[in-house]
Structures are given as structure tokens and as C-alpha cells.
Image (cartoon, rainbow, N blue to C red; front, side, top):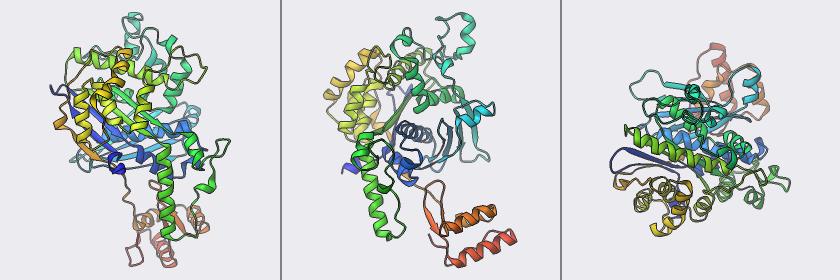
Length: 457
């Protein structure tokens, strides 16, 4: 029952007046499975900040996919300081993710913008994907908008003329409340700012966005995945080459459970106005700015100059304790505690007494200054989709990809025990002697190998 109540989902809930759409995603299991399949504690040198960024990026891709249908899908490619994250999410709930060794310093050396986010939407009845690339600029995001700065700064802030909602996230006194280093850390290791930038520039919407993941280093250490110095303990996680399939699966399950214990939440929420008018756009924009500032404050290091603590911290602690992120986060952004409870019930997630949730959420909403922003939710119309890490790779597909691979790649495979793995999901395929012969014949003829009885998954 616990696994059922904490399953990864996307949930879309309209407001009762149909002027707003609330989209929620929980991607905790997807993050744990991506870390496990690709051995990311070792390959990232146990970089907890980057793993939390990974969680928010997986969440954002699934939030985008939740607006599509069936096998329509989103491909998101985001380059960060340490690596490039590639995520593919289908509307029906399938998701897979992997990393590439491409990072911002390489782009900067070539004179290219850093932190590029590319999104492809592959849709029914469209020959080509809808593609867009954006690059967020932290200085632009924090620049005082028109009315605070000079009129000449209006264009630079990217204000949306149709809604008059400023692009900038600036709030008076923000530089005093949130240290610049906290904003920089939030920008580098959380996708919220990049998601907001994408939705404003590419989709033309005026959303409120918050994505948050937590990876607990202390719990990873308790489970033997980290050494005392914070480095990855490889022995706890390496695959045993001599293990039986049954033993291998048991170890995978143990690792999965331990990772889930170390990842108390990984969620995201987007509030989208639906041709709601200037007044609603401005109120959602204000909600976005205060939540984004408080979320950035979570990244402030102890003694880093912050004069206040984040109002969101008690909420996150409650979500981690009770596994009620769906209900608590919808309560926060809508102010409709009963509607959020009903939505969580419809999502089949853990839920709590609305009065107890209100006791946690209402003081936070007052601290953020959004206590008057209350939007009744049409919880009866909530649309839920379960999410799973899923890859449609096969040995045949892998063999076909090797037909055009460079010779050195094949030599490397032979040196690794004739084993090849899928980049997206990490699944390993052992190639038999007959399959190597067929592959070499296909390379000589430059035609894909034909499926044979030996090509089994």
C-alpha cells in the first residue's frame, strides 16, 4: 500500500472557473531509478546538488508531457555545470533519462551561451517535432522590472505586453533577504528558474513554477553508499558480473529501496493561466515571484549572509515526514485546502486532514503575502497518470545501431566481455559469438542484421 500511495504521478486539476490549470508531478521513484541504473553516485562523485538538479529536470519533462496525449512525448536536453541531462517523457507515463559528458565550460570555451534548455515536442499528425531552445540569464531574471527601474530597462526585463506581467522575478529588498550566492546555487542546481524561463519565452504563458528535490547525504551514508568523506562507496553498488539474474534483481531492489529512503521527495508544480486576463496573470506572477524567492533561499548556505530562513522549510519537512507533497503543495499554491485534499484522494496519494494541512500552509501563505490568492479547485475533474521508468530498447535495436559504429567502439565492446548497454536505461545485452558474426557481416554489407532466434532480450 505504501508503494501505491507514493507512486510517481502527474496530476492536472483545473480551477472551478476554468481560468487556471494546476499541474503537479511527483518523480521520486524516477530519480532513484535513474541514479541506480546509471550508477550516478559513482559517476557524479556523489554530487548531491547535481542529483537534486537531475530530479527537478526529470520532474519538469514529465510536467510538460502531461499536457500531451497518448504516445506524444517530450524530449528535454539541459546542459549544466557537470553534464548534460537528456530526458524523454511520454504523456502515457513512460520516462527514461541519462547523462552525456557535455557541460557548460565546453560551451563557454566556444563562445556559446551556457545552461541551454532544448525541448522537442513530438506530436500526432506532425511530421517534425516542435522544437525550441532557450538560455536563462540569472542577471536578467533578477533585474528590477519596469516601474522599479528606469523605463529603458523595460525591454531588457522581457515584460509580456499582453499581460503586463513582468518577466523579472525581482521583489523589493530581495537582494537583502536572499544572498546572491543562494540565487546562483538555485540557478545551477534546481530547474525552476530554467523551467520558468522556458514557459515564458517558448509557450508565452505567465506561470507560477516550483520544482524541488531532496537527496539526503546522511541517509546515503547510513545505507553504505557514501564513505565518511562523502565520496561514493563503490562496493555497495557495483554490479556483480558473476551474479545470477535472481541475485542481480535482488540487489537492484535493495539499492532501489535504499535510494528511495534517501530521497524523501522530488516534485514540481506549475500554475498556468488559461486566457484568464491581465488581473489573474498578475496575481499568478506575484505568486511565482514570492515562491521562487523563498525556494532560492533554501539554497543559502549556513552563515552565507541570509537574514531570514525560507518560509517553505516547514512545508518541505512535513512533506518528507508524511509523504503528502501532492496535497500540501496544491494547498500552498491554490489556498483551497478541501480541494487539495480531494485532488490528493483522486490521485491516490497519501493525504491528511485539511485542517491540519491548513495549520501548516496558512502561516506560510501569510509570510509570502499570498493569503488572499484563493482558487477553488475542480478536484472531480482531476486527471491522473502513473509514471514509470521505461525504455523500449531491444537487442535488435542495439545491434542495428552498432552497424555504423566506428571500429574502435566495437573493439572496446569486445574488451568488455562482449557486453553493450543502452544509453537511456543502462540495460546490458550480452552478444553471443553468432551475433558478432552476423554483426560483422552486416557491417561489411552496410545493412542492418536480420532478426534471428538468438536475438532475445
